[in-house]
Each structure stands twice: as structure tokens, then as C-alpha cells.
Image (tube, rainbow over all chains, first blue to last red; front, side, top):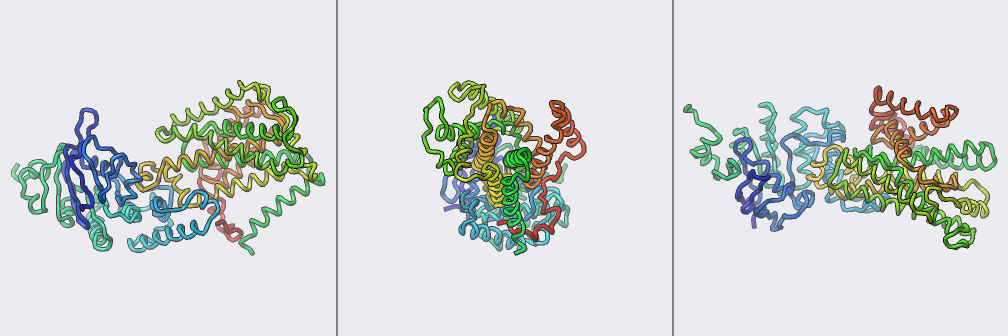
Length: 255
Length: 337
């Protein structure tokens, strides 16, 4: 059974067809890219998968569960985590708290437990805190745990956002342009980080990315979309030599 | 031992105040100012959950206070006073002490349910639009009570003194002062536990980025429900206490003017700070008393202070910091769970 299966996914906004008959199957521990020109509907696909939009047609199943009609937090608790094109950390909360709050779905205690500080509450909170510290340590963010994200550099904020997504213990991680706005040193760091995550955790990574360097060095499969429709699907080599992709997106040198 | 300094001095303080009031060392006027302070602390800390922590703009807090005030008053009057609805009181005055906290709880519970009027629209509505809904909720409550002749309508409702007298008949100590102080401590304790938990931190997450919160597994609708109902429920508790301090309620004591007063306290103290909301409630109550000689002119001076505050310190006295963030040494004297 594939981890994620999208069949005939279509999303219309009024008369505009943002995504048209999009199909994909992702298996466990794959690393796949979704590329295409601006406005091709890539982020809309992510928004559909993470439950932020409902599909106009088609269906998405995650681990065999149909996600239609689910709210985003319910989809997330099925094991889908994502980052955003623009960084969306909670800026007034410490890095540690950012990592704690994102474990909301497995807090596992009631409001009453919270008021009475029951044993269950204490155990769960300790566990949440332990997971957060471990993750910060593993992702080399420990020294920033008590800083506010807005005081960190852009590259570090990206790292925190990925750490926050990983605190959900996802089986599918969606990265929406993780290298956007990073300098070349940070991009190297990002490639290393994503590869490390992929080697360390049992997670499938699906990314939208414009920097071909990142895509080519990480992904084993690439899907190319334009105007909401899939124009190519294959290994990096196949994509690089696909005339339709070169015309629509990569561009050729013979101007 | 040192860790408990704060808790011990808090309870010692309550005890001392009660003793001083009992033996008339502090006069009735001071006692009533202290009780008003307590009510104001409950109001400002509970509104802070919505306006500060959740970043919404609720301007109908007075309405929920009104619900709590009327529900608990009707309960105690039916139980302990001669009234035109049931005639003779239902219970002997000796049960007043037992029934009073239950009446307060009933007021708070109904006020929490009334909070749904705002909580449910908040799933889809935010910001200015939700503020208008809270305003409407305030008006609905006031106008509904205005039109209920059976509980006095615009003339107000009274008879709550019988309950207070009943408690004093059992043991002659300043019961209302004790109840108000306990209610205040309870409120701050409850809110503090909520906002410091991972569950409760979902509330500021909504304020700072609602989309990220929902995507990062925070059930935003549930959090909004909890925040609005907790906030309005505690306002109801404040209302119940207020009604029994005065022994008389009138729907127009809870109109938009009251809601504004509470908002002033929240913005004066600092959004998202419990100690700020507590300090500002104390300060504001004192200010109102100090400016009493100005009579109605104080409502010219106080809004002027608000303008100056917004100009020179828009984040309020404390910003979103707690006292212990500003003075880390304080942490030695308490251990809050």
C-alpha cells in the first residue's frame, strides 16, 4: 500500500483550474520533487494534501485513509507534516515552545488533567519536553532553544521550521521551497540536513524546489507540472533531458 | 521552604486581611475597595486570555459578567430570600454557606455556555468582524434582561443580602471578602495552569499564526472553544461575586461601559501577561477611587490616560512578560506547577 496516493486530483478556484487531474503515489522513504514554473499549482497540491484545501474532484489517501472532509489538524495527525514557502514560525514563542506546541495532537490529556496537574499530565508533558530537547539536540539547535525565532537568522529559522515539522514524527514530510532565500552556504547545509533527516527517520520527503542543485542532489524521482497539469515524471536524468520540461521550465541554452 | 514563600505569604495575606476586616482595623470602605479589586482582577485576567493570549478583540466581557451575576443571584434569591416568584425561600439560611459556592458555579457555568455565542462564530470569523459579534453578544444579554420583568427588567434585581446574612448568621466573619479573595486566587491559578501547559500554548499559537497552528496539529476550533468559554465562565464568576458584594444588580452596570473598563485594564497591564493584568486591575481600581472627587469628570481623565498609554507604551505596563521574566530572582520564592 502506498503511503500517499492522489488520484485525479483537481482543484478549481472559480473559473481557474489550479490543479488538473493530478496523480501521484509515494512509497515509504522515497524522496521526490515537485517542480514547475511559478503559478503551476505546486503549492496548491501541497495545500490539498495537507488538508488545507478540499479537492474539487479526486481523492487523497494517506496510509489507506481517505482524507476528504478532514480538517488540517486531523490530516496532520495521520502523519503529514509540512513547512511553508514563507516561514511561519510562532515568532513570540521560544524555539522550544514552537517544538512543544506542534506536538499538540499527541498531548493526550484533557483540560481537567491540565487544571489538576494529574499524573497523566505530568508524564505527557515530560515526554513532550523530552522529545523537543532531543530533536533540538539532534538538529543542532539546542543553543537556540530559549531564543525567539524572530531573533534568529533566516537560515536558522528554516532549520527550526523543519525541526518543528519533524516533531510531529511524520511519515510524510512536505517541504515547500526549503531553499528559498538561502545563500549558497546555507543551501549546502540544507542539503545535508534533508539527507540526514531522510537517513535518520523513517520518513518520505516530498519537496517543491526551484533550485535544481537541491533537487538533483537529493531526489530520486521528479514530477513536473505546468498550468496545473503534469507534463513529466521520472528520474532526474530523464527529466533533465525531457524536451517538454526544458521548454516549459528548465530552459535551453540555444536562444 | 523558600520555594513556597509566595504561596504562604499569599494565604497569610488573605488571612490577615480577613482578620483586619473582622476587627474593624480596616474600615468598610477599604474592604469594599479590596473586593472590587478582586473582581477586577478576575475580569482582566480572564479577558486577557482572549484579547491578550489569543489576539482576538472581545469587547463584550460585561455581557458574560452580567449572565453570571443574574444566574447566581436568581439562584440565591430563590433559595434564601422571600421573593415574588416562589414566595417563601426554598432553603433555611443555615445552608447559605454550602449553597453560595454552588450558586457562583452555576453562574459561571451558564456564562461559559453563553460564551458559545461568540465561540462558535469565531471558528470562521476573526479580528474586527468577531469584535462586532462580541459587541452584539453584550447588547443581546443586556437587552434580554431589560425585557425580563420577572427578574426586575431595567429596575434591577435584589435580595442577595439574605444569603450573605445567612452565612454571617452561621459565623460572623467577612464572608464576601473571603469569597472574593478565594475566587481571585482560583482564577489566576486556573489561568496560569492553562496558559503554561502545552495544551494552553495552542492559544498564543493561534494568535501568532493560525494557519501554522492548524497545520501543526493544533485543533484550533477546540482551542477557541476552550478559550472563549473559560474566559466568559470566569467573567460569570466575577459577576456572581460582584452581585453579592453589592446586593443589587442592574443590567446597565454590565453594558459596554463595563466591557470598556475591563479592556482598559487588559491593555494597561499588557497583553498576554497574567501578572500584568493583575497589577493593572489593582492600579485601575485604586485610580478610580483616587479620582472619585472628580466625579463624572474621571471619565474624561481615564480615557485620556489610555491615549497617553497607547502613545508612549502601547504594549502596556508589562508587555507580554510576566513579573518573573523581569525579575528572575522572584523565581526563588515560588514553584508553580
